Length: 379
Image (cartoon, rainbow, N blue to C red; front, side, top):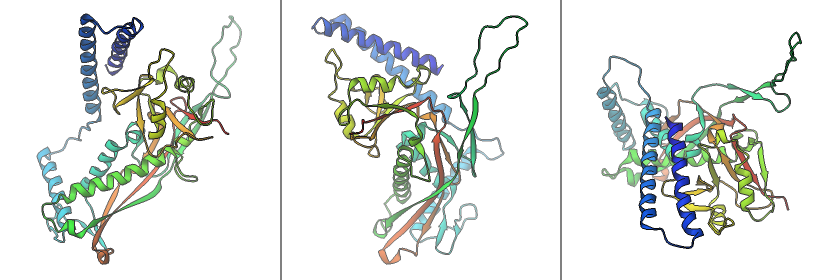
């Protein structure tokens, strides 16, 4: 159903462009009939977008394993754990057996429900992480990778009683390990003492934003000897110049991705690069990059959403300035047990409380055909 909806949306969007192109070529305003047709097409596109969004949300809903415990009980336990978390930060300890926190020498380990809130917000903040193919498993994960660059499976004409010659591609593999990383958030004791302050919401948001920024940086740039991320992209388009991007560069980059992987493709670039692309026009004087309320990120380029990240390099000689493609080609292994711990005594002399989170993660390209990069010409 989702594929059919996307195809229908592309068809309707093409009809919108045809209406505008016709009026522009004839150098006139839209007629009353064209305006009505345009509005109807726009409404149908918005309805399709809303349907797609709901279908994706439905796919992400996990159906719990059947047990004898009602959902209301789970919800009540989650709320109780939130209260216990807030109480512990404020210096009070809730002693209920089902929600009491695990004590350590310097603080307490926070219930999984709180940690899961942080990871859920990370997905909302970081669309690259949300769109990647995620594996929530401990230990080292080996993923098979079919490589036909040297030799591929082929089919050819044959005659009866003649042996077929075999040919085969090569199966390689990528290995996803678990690189440990930690995040520390300090909370002012003055805020904690304010009984009206939403301490749980503030803590989860602050940690989620910090974790999302770090994850996004590692997925986009990686770190030598640690997480590789999109540094492993092999489909490369070199720009014609070292200091400017042309429309031809963008078209060639887009066409690096096969049509079968175009449906969920997005552009990723820095704010300065997006600003530069806003000035690009096609042969008819139309801007290539446009504000688009139907796009997930508010703007589109050659019909695909544009996501902006401060972690991307600006235009410069030899720099990788744009990624384009379907981010599901990136495999991310995140250890499921993201742990959070409150440190009450360590920062007492600063009049703050520390909240530290730990995770293990790795990321590599899983499907080399899904993502391409634009690299500026070396000076």
